[in-house]
Image (cartoon, rainbow, N blue to C red; front, top):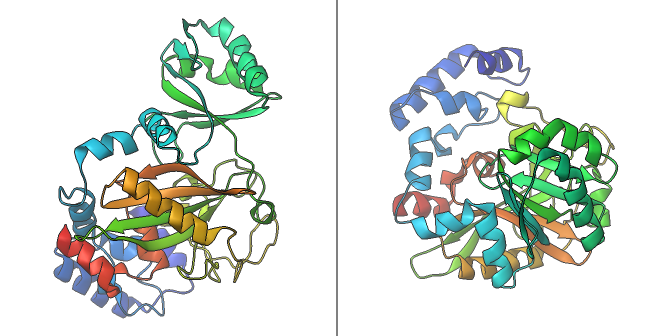
Length: 341
């Protein structure tokens, strides 16, 4: 809370203090909770008048914990990256090539299962590079979210990363996937991470599937992660045309900045058209038919050959949609989601 207050105090775009206090109290009374999200969603900034259209913490919990919107069996697929990789592959959905996994010291490369010691890890991963003719793989936790415990293993840094993370890998459960090469147009914006498109899907009572939110996430500062929960930033996307909005957004704990061009490359965001945007929406709808949870956030990478599903979540914070749509509850489809929950 102290860090949030510092951001508010130093924000040149904040409203007057009397108005902030009045609105925060109104938000609190209307939502029946402390105005934590009034600050966290930048509702204190000038130009925001519809602050009650933003979700409260209780409303987010109502949606994400709803048994009407979410099914435990589908959650078990979505929240475990190993299950998700196997299931999507079985259903012939485009996903990163699945190269293997480990459960502690037990490693499986999809052909053999072996128990490894620390000194054997280097040779094991060298073999994966050789068999699959690749020089970069992503190693990530089976269950963590928000970019936690995601590592880029390259041929060049393999010895260094094994020395640094070998013990951790042997005590963890991880999945190994081929590193994707993103579309050249997106690579021009930021090339050090695979920058992903987040699409949120909603299945209504009739079984019709809607795309209810879209935004693009970018890494910065040399990071190979694009996740906005790991310090990156995100930009709203027009749902019809697939074009980026003018300015980015960043979560408050990372400074809450607004920028109109990438800080590393100077690339101007506004009106950039995301390649294969229509195909990405169609892919998500196809994926929902395979995993019919009623509200899912899908992370999509755009390659030269089309969209690829990275992962999906049934329990996201809904912070992204609320910020890029400037209050989801001003849209009938989101009010329906809340009522359904």
